[in-house]
Structure formats: C-alpha cells, structure tokens
Image 1 (cartoon, rainbow, N blue to C red):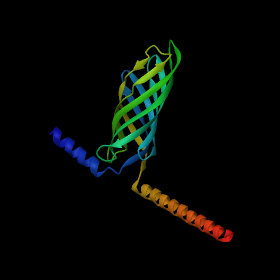
Image 2: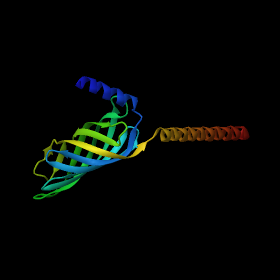
Image 3: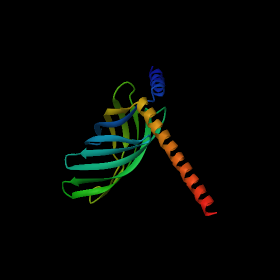
Image 4: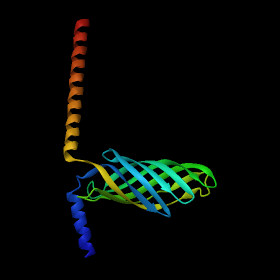
Length: 184
C-alpha cells in the first residue's frame, strides 16, 4: 500500500511539475528551535531565504541564497546553499557566523503549500557552541505562483530583446562598413 502511494505521488509530481512558486512564507521547527522563514524565487533554479530562529535563550537571523535541482520535475527539489547569520545569545551578547544548508522540498500539487526538510550546519563566532548541526522541517504557504502564461510572457520578452540586440549589431556593422568605404 505504501509503495503504491509513493508511486502515485511520484507520477502526480511529474505530471504537475509546471507549478512553481515565487514567494512563500512559513514556519520551521527543529532541535528545540522555532522559526519563521520567507523564500523568494530569484531565477528559475535560485532562491533566497530569510530565516529567524528563536530559542528560550537566543535568537538568530539568517540570509541564505539557495540553488535548486529538480528530482522528479520542478515540484520536487533538492537544494543547497550558503549564507550568514547574526543573532544574540543571553550570556554572550551579539553573535554572528556562517551557514550551509542542504535539504529537500516538495511543492504540493493543487495546494499552495511547500513542505521541506533540511540540515543547516552553522559556524558561530562569539558563541558558547562554535559549531552546530541542526535539522528542521518546514511548511510554507505560497503567495505567488509562477504560472505558465507568465513564463511564456517572459520568454517572449527575451526573444524581443535578442532581436533588438541583433538589429543594433546589424546597424553598427553597416556604420562600420560605411565608414570604411568613406575612408577609402
């Protein structure tokens, strides 16, 4: 039964892989931390994520650019990224450091939800723990989806820009030829 369900979900995600998200906001839970995060798609395979992690004695704000690789279409991705964080620890004051992130996410077809699991190793400066390796699960609500019509419109814009560049280059070439003929 479980195997059939996995096959069904696989086929569903392949068939509906054109549903991508642009902006999503949600919560992250893991390792005695609770946080909020906002994801923004920047390019087709790149996104940026802003994360806040809250604990009883500390807080942390992280910015991570991420690269996505589709597994079974564009709805089911693995991702990895690197960024930096700043925060505060009750007994140490302001802390900062560097982060890596790797994980998997699934944009649920026909629902405006993205579910993900990730590992975010962090190197801290001025912190009681200089290194941590937390894992978390996140659920995001999708605010803006990238529709097929929007992708087609952007493709047309790129084609028009390319045609304008080619026409400009042809005019430059004609001016060069005219100038060479004039000089000779």
